[in-house]
Image (cartoon, rainbow, N blue to C red; front, side, top):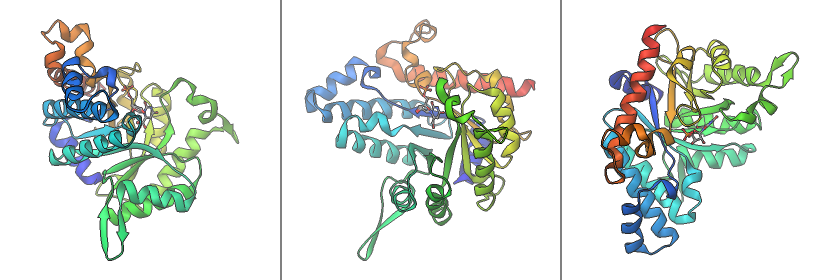
Amino acid sequence: MINKLVEKIKKTNAPIVVGLDPMLSYVPEHIQKAAFAQFGETLEGAAEAIWQYNKAIVDATYDLIPAVKPQIAMYEQFGVAGVAAFQKTVDYCHEKDLVVIGDVKRGDIGSTSAAYATGHLGKVQIASKTYTGFNEDFATVNPYLGTDGIKPFVDVCKEEKKGIFILVKTSNPSSGEFQDRLIDGRPLYELVGEKVAEWGSECMGDSYSYVGAVVGATYPEQGEILRKVMPKSFILVPGYGAQGGQGKDLVHFFNEDGLGAIVNSSRGIICAYKQDKYKEQGITPENFADASRLAVKDMIADISGALAQR
Ligand SMILES: O=C(O)c1cc(=O)[nH]c(=O)n1[C@@H]1O[C@H](COP(=O)(O)O)[C@@H](O)[C@H]1O
């Protein structure tokens, strides 16, 4: 799947991911109304609203982008109905030939990680039959439990030709509380980066490993260091747009080949219709998905422009 991701990035010329992180408050009123008319003001109604919202955004952007990243928390808040909307979203994005990064941030003791890996990336055995669970292409993984927690994911990835992105330096303001702590004089995120490179070294696709890393756009200096620590790992870079990251901050997350990083924006794309910049271009809540398309184009231009100048 890392090979497919690289090929799709080359084909679209767009090292970006659209984050499908739907809060009900983001969904335009006409979609909410239609969903509530059908299912009532219920968990099912909310799940229908976020699914219709996602579908419109995917339809408006899929030809421009290589990948999407649905964040499962946004769906889980609506219980079983929300998780069904997550599954529908994953399946629909596959129909559109998009690479799906399940942002599930899992990681536990070995046996439990194995079950997470099976559910999100692998196949489950039921008597004489095998089934896929959620069937994403990549999952985000938390490394706090160490090698035991990571290995089951790597094993499933090897078998299924899928991939993971391991949290190394996260984009949030408090990420330094633990991740920047010095251990033997070196920050923890660097040590985790070294482990990612080690775990990834036996999991190579054609040019990159299918064990990747997450490094926030809001920490460009750390991004530059980590790029060198993990030269063969793809870096998923969240924090663009709503959290303040810009194209000019991101050049050092990429390798000289122009590859090696993929930048996520969620609210910046899915809520673009609320921005004055797009309202001035004729966007209303009715044509919200057109704003997402414009925002994708602007994001691609911003990042490509910055990369062309380095
Ligand atoms: O793993 C992630 O994707 C992630 C890691 C990180 O360090 N920071 C971060 O924001 N994310 C996720 O990336 C998305 C960012 O959303 P926006 O800030 O709306 O673009 C959310 O789904 C976060 O959960």
